[in-house]
Length: 214
Image (cartoon, rainbow, N blue to C red):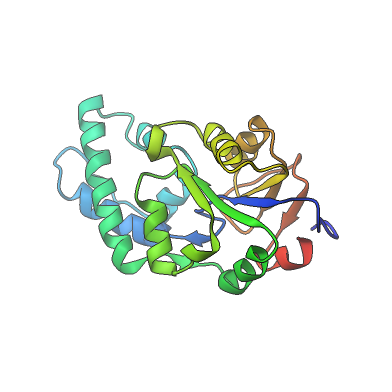
């Protein structure tokens, strides 16, 4: 972790999965329920499979996992999974990373906070409802809103909220690439789902390290 990046930014944009929480266990349950509703998929949905594709755009996840299906069946399954996912997460939520509440409380006093995720529409709202942490955030954007890639959604947040010196925090190479394309510096959360070998301005191994860093 870098010694300090205090007073260098006016805002922080977070990834969600692998950065603020881990919902893969309950997403696997939801997708298993969805798969059980169709007769053209016969494979178990496990947490490991979900973790392997977490962070990809929602449609790309299904292209990756179910590329052997024709487009009509793939889209049908995606819609069933999306519905089941929101229903189960609304009840069960995800696993919040340690010290999330107190760290966000600290950061929100100094920075405007945002979320940009590759998730479906409604997913960030479920995170807000189950975590009760919406009040820390000034805005959010996701793949499901416009179907745009993450870099474009980061740019939208920056432009819509007139951010001058934002930083993006995420846990995958895709997050790094998106932030870089958007012209935003990147902090790597190495406790998440991916690996970033170089290019980040700092690396954190626990969410609470942001208090010391920022």
